[in-house]
Length: 607
Image (tube, rainbow, N blue to C red; front, top):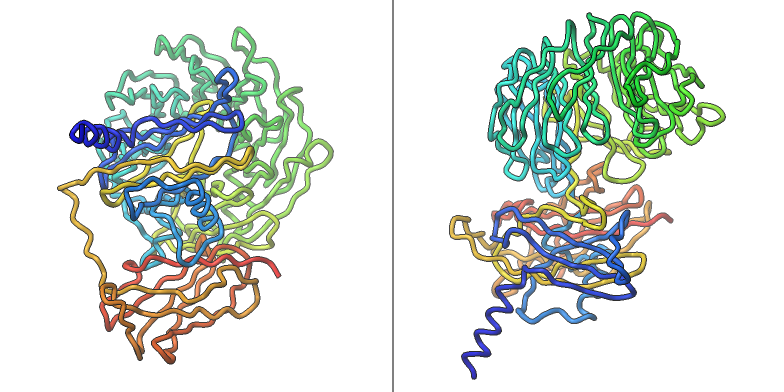
């Protein structure tokens, strides 16, 4: 009987990473991890959220999760789980999760043949540069798969496309892609990667990582747009003044449409099911659509259009005229021009958040913002300085986006190659809130790798994680509406190939009971430095350095702590604004470095 019970317990423990189900308030949450997690190796955490009545997937939710290693093999009680959620939300000094599923990385495509990977949070213990991904030659355009597992980079000088394994940041293939590959477009189903070349397009099979075919389309540079169901690819031929219609299922060009001279850009509108192509020489925006995929409208503007942009499911298209320094805004439902808005000199790129269009101008350090909500009546325009120098002062250029949305709503990241900096801007501010160094490299374009839970299919939310050590972990789950809290369990197996973590002999013990303070007011951090084994206090240390920074790295202060009575150390600072602050420690005399300390967090609120 005892043996049977032991076998049952072992089976339960070994299956802790299998599917688990939590049901409450009419909502069912199914949790699992694939593959079975091993310390230091990649695994996917997945939640399937459905209604209990009919199993309908619940979409567009904002679940939050943390992963926290248990100190005991006993399952966490409901009260313990709720206490963890409260502690993680309140940024407690003494309670931080093992893995926070709200982290993100900033990727910079550099003028050199490499990509900077910047960790704006935990990297502040030392260098923020997480790693540098080497390329054979400088990259020109890039695209990341929706699951954040693969990054494709075109390299015109080596006639190849690099394939980067994102979890390991390793280049796993360099695919030959004909002459001068530049623009990249990944199908929605991720089956094919489309690559523009000097005489057409190369179509790469993403499973085999080999070219499936090469299609010659016409003379001149080429831009690519794909329709929503991946049945048609639209390819512009700049010098031939045509758009090639390619049947993706046949991988063959089936039609050539005469449009205008010097075609410069093309986009596809999901709302109107229409492709819009810009003619730089003629100053026309040609709409291609209908069941026969033919020209259905022409919007006449002035010559000089270089770029067209469309916000996701937006009603309006934006055509940038670099020569005239204006943006022409047109209605995709009526195919008519509604606004012409002045922007900065030599405007060449446009990006979008849910509230604004951002126009980058290489001739000025100012970024123009256009309020999308105002376009039904008028175009409300503002601007902010993204650096000290105009981007044109750097030789670094790229067709990839230099302005991208940050994970926080209403914020963007802006690359300024002339400053060798990346700026963080939050909507409503007169200037960027802060910046990130790119370590003397010119950032030509940016991508954001968001590790937070994302909806990959209707009702399915997942993220990729690496758990640092073997053991049993709580996956702490929070859904705000309806408010649901549950701790799922996951067991992580030991990894013999993983170097064992060297335990530090020092422990920082915070003494503050206050973990929330007000912006603009002095805050005195009090703590002890203890021997990790004996808990004996280390007294009269003169080199205890405290580093404080405001996430995601937009303000920081570094200072020596003052030694006081009974082994208590103090450091005072004034947080300039509300937000979450991270606190690191360094003690050179004890060989204790910033990256060895587990950071404390402090929540700062508005006065």
